[in-house]
Length: 409
Ligand code: AMP
Ligand code: MG
Image (cartoon, rainbow, N blue to C red; front, side, top):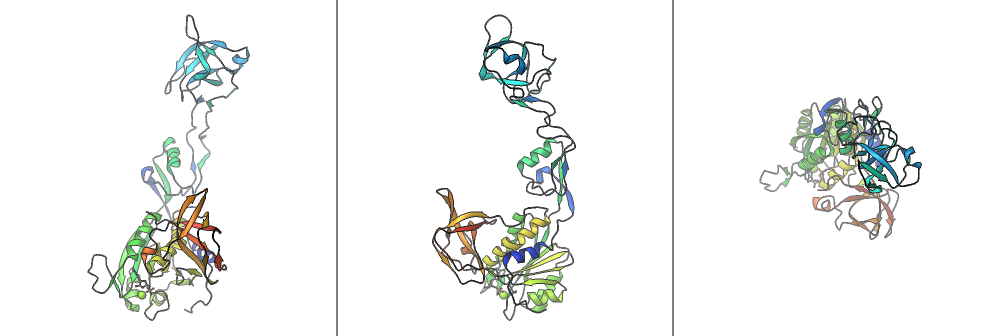
């Protein structure tokens, strides 16, 4: 395996990852548990909804043509239709029906006058004075406005948000067919690491594994921790060899050019085909991506913030594609830079910023510490500011691209 000399631009690197990934096999999930999943196939409506023309207001169902006479027009009230009730008969000429929101329109009526535009008529019998003429269709919610039986109600790839689930419940469906959740193995590597529950005794706590596990879970995957491999090729190889049956294997650390960075060699020995190593970004430059069969391997850098940033830029998009989402790229919003930034060209920088809305715009304040070796530099960040690869300075007030972070609490 030769080391790739050129650094890949971030967009190319992400495209190469996504090119290797497809939605996973579908499963049925009860709607109660389907929030945030994406549809594996089109959902076709089996009910026409609403099933009948119904009123959008409390008022009077009328024949619009009856109101062409000089106002007010007195109509006798033939019946009262409540929501959940069915009109008993078609209306006769000169008649209207008192109607509540959601109640079906009696046959023969074609518009609704809101109650506020009427006055109870003086005198015997149930009658009403209509104070305002209405056009045909006014305040009528037509049959089939929500869904027509046989049409595609929600196409494949639709993320199931709360209203989407409401539409499925209204169709009488109890479950949705969605790609299964990706199974993600996480391996930490490093002689200096100990588990969070161990006394450190000169070591540092492995924070990458639990942090990445949470990031995986938040992205919709199922995380399994493979523990900590020591910095020997044999140990890294043995740990990776145990990672069978996963859709994604994430390693952290040991992927740079250190003398004891064995992740590259171990992956090669296990027959993982390397697609690229190193991306023109900071933090996160040493990222390695490969596949073996249907399993995607991502060697993430060891610095805590670097591993989280590469998760946002590469791992989350891959998991989203596996989960069947159409929108998989990191989301971006426009913002303005508070202060000024400079860097040498060559790497795109993803600057941790805390962004707040001010005077109609999102102003991004770069956090004081941008080191990738500590998590504290990622805490308090709300977005990553994309400082493009070719640029070397950004002035105060510059229009910038901000990536909202999925790790925010
Ligand atoms: P490496 O890529 O192995 O050179 O590691 C880069 C830096 O990240 C070193 O300072 C490591 O101690 C640190 N590091 C590596 N793995 C972890 C981890 N799992 N949790 C926290 N820090 C780590
Ligand atoms: Mg190391």
